[in-house]
Image (cartoon, rainbow, N blue to C red):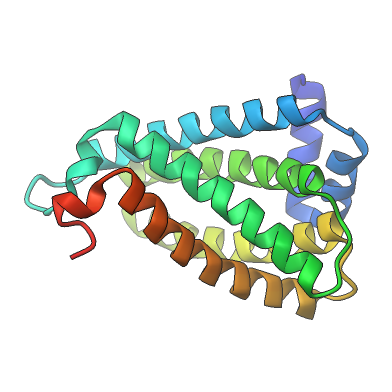
Length: 194
């Protein structure tokens, strides 16, 4: 992947997310490539989170795992894996017929876009804090809109309403899966869930 491919794809994602998703799906990336890309995106997100934690005032009471980049990485990667699987199976249940690999491909790209946007927000928060707050709200809305289009394209859903249903139900699945993941990596022992 070169900037000649990624920059136009980023522009298309901002303007026509469904067409961007169809472009990504047309690449037919191998499963190994997709899971490697997901691990790299999880590492990038871990870096962004670690940077945010380092910039957070020390007076805030952060959970114990926040100080460990490895625990953050496991948590971020686990969230991504659980969410992709929850969205895939929910999509099939509501009438979609996409593939797990296709969904993973578009979700990895969405997370790349979000991580880059989060880094830009960190920089903006130093220059213009009020503008950074507004940009954060816009980013949340944009992510929601793009996610719906990506779900329709990757899961071959018949409508945006079904994509919204997938989003809600897989979010519930994520909460359940996250509880299990946190228990597995021992965060309940630190009192995070209590």
